[in-house]
Amino acid sequence: MTVLTPALPKTGLAPGLQGRCAACEIRELSVCSALSETELARLRSIITGYRVEPGRTVIEEGGPATDLFNVVRGTVKLYKLLPDGRRQVTGFLFPGDFLGIALNDIYAYSAEAIEPLELCRFPRKKLEALLVELPRLERRLLGETAHELAAAQDQMLLLGRKTAKERVASFLISLSRRAIKRRRPASPLDIPMSRTDMADFLGLTTETVSRTLTQLRNAKLIAPHGRKGIAILDMNGLSALVDGDSPAD
Amino acid sequence: MTVLTPALPKTGLAPGLQGRCAACEIRELSVCSALSETELARLRSIITGYRVEPGRTVIEEGGPATDLFNVVRGTVKLYKLLPDGRRQVTGFLFPGDFLGIALNDIYAYSAEAIEPLELCRFPRKKLEALLVELPRLERRLLGETAHELAAAQDQMLLLGRKTAKERVASFLISLSRRAIKRRRPASPLDIPMSRTDMADFLGLTTETVSRTLTQLRNAKLIAPHGRKGIAILDMNGLSALVDGDSPAD
DNA sequence: CGACTCGTTGACTCTCTTCAAGGATAGTGG
DNA sequence: CCACTATCCTTGAAGAGAGTCAACGAGTCG
Figure 1 (tube, each protein chain N blue to C red):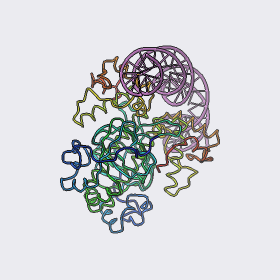
Figure 2 (cartoon, chains in turn brown, purple, blue, red):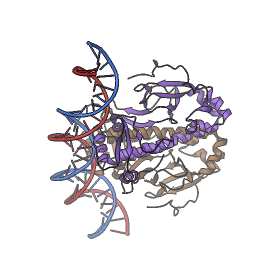
Figure 3 (tube, chains in turn green, yellow, brown, cyan):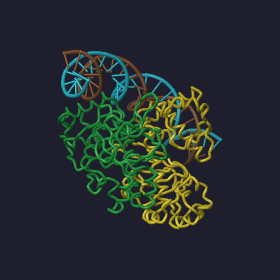
Figure 4 (cartoon, protein in one colour):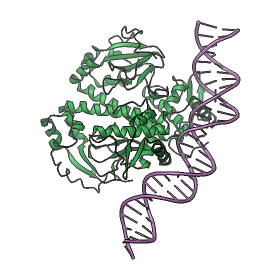
């Protein structure tokens, strides 16, 4: 289990991002969209760039919550562990998403890079001090947290009451929706995470996820697309599986 | 399915609570604790009291998010439904807890009174206007939301990865912790919710909940206490069943 | 090339659900 | 005060959906 990745270069911002929020690709997706140019300048002053290799830990459950992050590039999985190793992935983060909101001064979950990751890092103390000056940022942070809460509640419904097929279908639809948000095509979906990650997110096993995807493929609802991609052939059919309608085996 | 309980008296604050936040029993538990006397006066000006009978709906999923509430007395269950009626209870609220944080202008879940309920109601528009003047209140709201998010993540771990016995034990321990917070005894627990509510919260069936409680009783970990109460005979034993259950509360 | 990881598939198992019935408690009305 | 009913809780037996265990193919990397 890797600790706060001290081995990684905390060097500086990614090239093309160095102190240039104005040119930031995901700016309008992120908390930064709440700010004017001048406010952004204040925020920029406390930001450092951060890169994390796939498989490395960004933050660790139980560790001191020293920083908050904005995902600029790559994918992150958030998860919690039971002592015996059982894992629950509580979410996946994509560019524009916010990471590190903590209750006390302790992170409540771990975060690990799935793809090569670029982050904007905000030292927590400095950011909190800045919040006093930037009420719009604080409001946006509240909105971001409320959004995560809503997603968590949807996931509770999924984990508590949906069948395996409904879970997998819900997941694909959710990925599709988030792709659209990031101005990516809704259909040839990138699936950056492993079957294990998907299973740990959906409360299933890798075998069940695999079998269920096969079912959906046989039902002509989806099709493999390249190495790690999935094409959605019938979005209506997929949605029907989730809306609690009578399932077509 | 009841709508915003128009039949109920929106008359005024409960006796002994009429415009008297200073004497409010749950003040130090609630968002109000973030405020000084003078700030509280501002807040009080927008509050109206609200009472709801058991079984009646306070807010409804998909309905316009016009108000926020503070629970003064009683118990609330929050839940989401699937079209075919499957239900997931996403949480229970006790005195001091906050209700109604919404993302858009739409409630993301329903809330129903389990016990006779007393609420402080804040019109959303007015409260938002007030937030500008009361940054400490906004901060507290953010904290409250982050707290709910942490609880939701714990619940995801429970729903996705814990066994029936672990779920029930976790639930009892959680109830016990929250009782302590409200300065109530940790052991003879009040269980205001039905088996159905517990089951819908834990992602189980009433039968499984019942059987599991019987197991715990046979193992001398718990004992029935009065009509709807449960005494925890062996907290360590219970905790051992769920070791790795994160505190959160 | 051989070792490794990852994903898929098959056969069997098991936990929890489903279906069914009985018991306890409270509220109602005669 | 006592049926009578309705609701909730408990218990039992049988069944199903997902898990476990195991094997194999495909891609990857040293």
